[in-house]
Length: 311
Image (cartoon, rainbow, N blue to C red; front, side, top):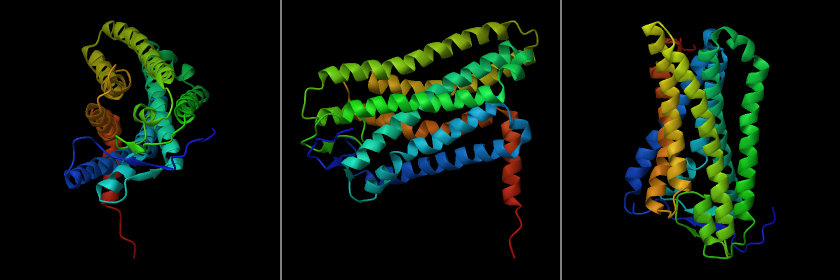
């Protein structure tokens, strides 16, 4: 990627219309970020410490927790840094990887939700063949595939954005480097690139959503055929957690990247929810409705609480 711009750094203006609220936002976002990291680390510990949870479903949940640790870490530390009163400047070389990893992790999560929907489909529609279909090798291929295609999508979007010349101004009307706000600063006509980016960003989540919808259409049909009321309740409970996480993840993409006229304040608010609140809620969504995860999590917390002190 050739850098022909004369801009060497950008100034992050932060969330629009939040002047004089820096101290409050710093404390609020720090709490969100802390609980996001702790919650997802606890999910990882709970799954790793229980052999009963070493199944494809929880393997994919582990990868989701890893993504939920790194995803907010792309933009949150810098945001907390300048909310504390430090410099709002970010170098050109720092802006490029920030945009890349944001879309890489976001796209990876999107593909991962699709894979998890397929896993639920096999578990409910073909329970007797589940172990045969969801072999370790297939799970590994699916997990690697989510990151591979996420990397391709992020590389394309990053190249699309930073192959443009940036020669001033350098004030980013946002709290991190993202495609819509960066294109506004380019010293070139971006109309064609905006259309290409709109199609690219829209096509990927739409394709994933249609695949998820297909999986859950088959799942609902299978659940309705279950004779046992307890069996139907258990199946619906498992699927509802995943569907809740999907809605929390996909709705911000629609609101931010597919709206005809961008609204900076709305975009920033939705983006904060997407970056901090959703990753924080995912551990709660998956643990509170899952008895096995709650049991394993309780054991982990008890072991930590009663850990003997070193002499």
